[in-house]
Length: 453
Image (tube, rainbow, N blue to C red; front, side, top):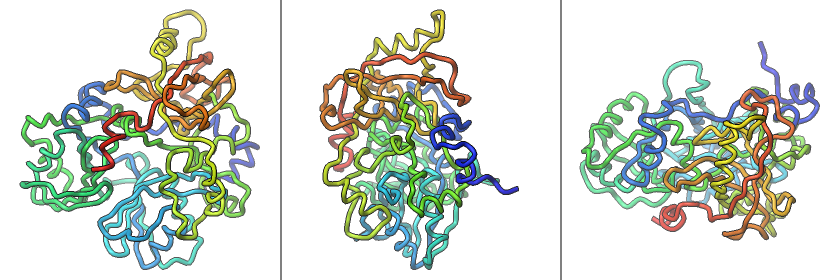
């Protein structure tokens, strides 16, 4: 049976907002154990000792090979590919013809004419679509995440080590001092007799490495990490804590994908894309025009990633936007008393505030809440959750430049009105939560030292 295309689903629903607001598609969850101890202690591990995060199951891999693979990536990505040699990685960003985000992923240059694009399926789908409609001398092999893979284990394992003792633990399991590796560069090690690739990177904004290799080596490598000296304080981190790491480092996951533009390329894509690949929208952002839900690379701090040294989809639109981006990414620190009152409404009569399922409180794939100043919307609050290390509820947001200075007082409107039909949304009332603008990344180390090392 052929699945319904996005174009057909849109024709049936009549409106992109109506289609996505009531879609029975939950927020992204990692298909790994939720907790090994408890998510509060697991959050603290990447600041106090060493966190071990299993990345093997929640991301999709697209292996691109052939002499035309780099040209495909250059045509689709806003990034520069000058000097992108073997052993390098980068945050790959793609936009629609009108300059709005399709999404981002991590791109690894593994070998000559071999790349691995790792991340959210929407970016993978967009690259695959452009490969199939083009005339590139390239082939693709896809390995879906474990939540949707038809059968069998992942092709690769991925283990991330994060925290102040991560380097010492790595030296123990590799049997020697670590080489100097720049941020987003790769090195190779031997662990338990297995060849291991390592990316100098960290989701929580702390020192660390992302280790990966063939799945058949996963058990041996994991065993070596778990068997390291107890003085390193290694803590396994489950899905609950891991899902909040980005709030400390400042990366915004799953921004709304710009699927519904009028450009013929987007119309063709909607005919190609199964409707089951599209995520839900939710939150207090009440725009009826789907374009008002879209974001640009500049909204999320990716302006430095955009390079006009090559032609790519959306270049002309981004050249115009680059002249004066109207918004910028910030962290919002939610008022503790207002958050406490919202959670406490569970214990009082009448409809309470929208339930906050700690530690990650978003309730749609693409979560957007209105950010207000004097009752007027000045921005959008995105991913949101609780950080035990900072003892704070925070969100990543993009807001108008004139309100983006640290210390600025704003209000986050929490909850939907009217209440949507998503399964994760119960009857509730909207509440206003005061918030204070803070820098992004929120954590001092991530902001001041992490990327410079």
